[in-house]
Amino acid sequence: MGYRDNPGNAVIAAYTQLETLDRDHVRQTPADAPFSLRHMFERRGTIANVLPYLLMEAQKSREHALSYRNFRVGAAAVVLYWRDGREYQMYVHGANMKPTTADDINVHAEHVLMRSIERYLRPGDEVAVPALAVIGDYQDDQQSGRSTRTLHPCGVCRDDFCSFDRPSFDDTLFVTARADLQTLEWFSLPELTAFHHDETGDELSYAQFDHPLDIFQPLDTTEGIVRVDDEISPDERLFDERVKFPIARGQ
View 1 (cartoon, rainbow, N blue to C red):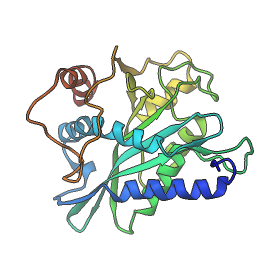
View 2: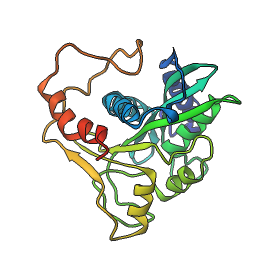
View 3: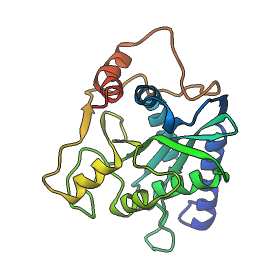
């Protein structure tokens, strides 16, 4: 029996699997101040360093997507909760769920992710979302009609990100990628909304690779959200030059 035969149970199972992914990546460290109050260069460096791992977490999320037409989207975010002088670092996950042609179940990956961020939030927390990734197969934007290099959050999700109060996504780096991770774009939420509201808007930053990069392999992240290797592979150098360093420089 496939998930189309019992879509309700399939959705419950998918939510459970995504929550398990969330709980697998919780780390706490002493912190003198919340992320938003740290120096700009420190914030950019943190964001650039987590990108390969964030993209792989979005890929994991995508494995739990449910789509009757095999249009699967995965999302992941690095979320930092600061409370009582300690910082709790998490990867939070989301996947789209539309198991049948009926409209009774139609959940976007970004909405699952937003609700999860809220679920882990406690009163008094300072919360920041330094970076958020969305991975999926390409299609033109259905609201703005604009052609893009990668799948962007749709118009409904863009509006919800803009109206979200705690946390605010205004300072979040959004990274979108095709399913093979060979084409990536990155932008802020204001840049994303301007791009889709103005046909003459500025082109978004992007990078393309002519082969799958070996850095996108499963990693053990139990020691935290960033793993440092002794050796840097050619593909890692390529990713650093085209993606990581430009982001760290604010480009």
